[in-house]
Amino acid sequence: MSEAVIRRAGVDDAAVLAALSAETFCATFTHYPPEDLAVYLKDAYGLDYTRRFLADPASAAWLMEMDGEAIGHALAGPCGLPHPDVTAACGELKRVYVLPRWQGGGRGSRLLRTALDWLEANYTGSLWIGVWSQNLAAQRLYARLGFEKAGEYHFKVGATRDHEFILRRG
Image 1 (cartoon, one colour):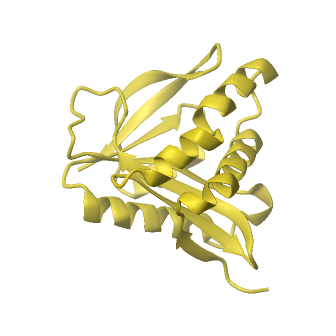
Image 2 (image 1 turned 90 degrees about the horizontal axis):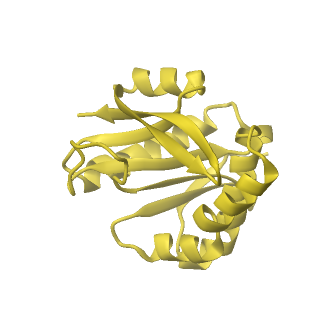
């Protein structure tokens, strides 16, 4: 088996990225009612949204592939988190996911590092991440990378409101 390859995604990758995004989100967050999940996936992971994101020059996405199969992805761009200190110079890690069967072996860390390196090169302000309050492993990882809790908000998935932490570095 070869090593996972990370490559920048383009508009032509929209269908693959949209499908992978929905699959990894559903595999990671299993606590949502199906009706809430359906609404959220259509809006936040749909093909139209994905095409617009990939066409935005202020944003970037990467696909991680193993033997031609997309197994992970990351998205980064201008910060959209609801915090009073966010400015146009701030970047946000919007997503980083690897399919469960491919987790381990440093794949997620490589994908995360790729997105953070791009953010550092393209944004002069603080870097931000929103993380579910119940995702303790992610919070520990981000703390090791220098992110600190800067606020909280409610993340909407259909009618469900999740308690989220806003993390900042810099």
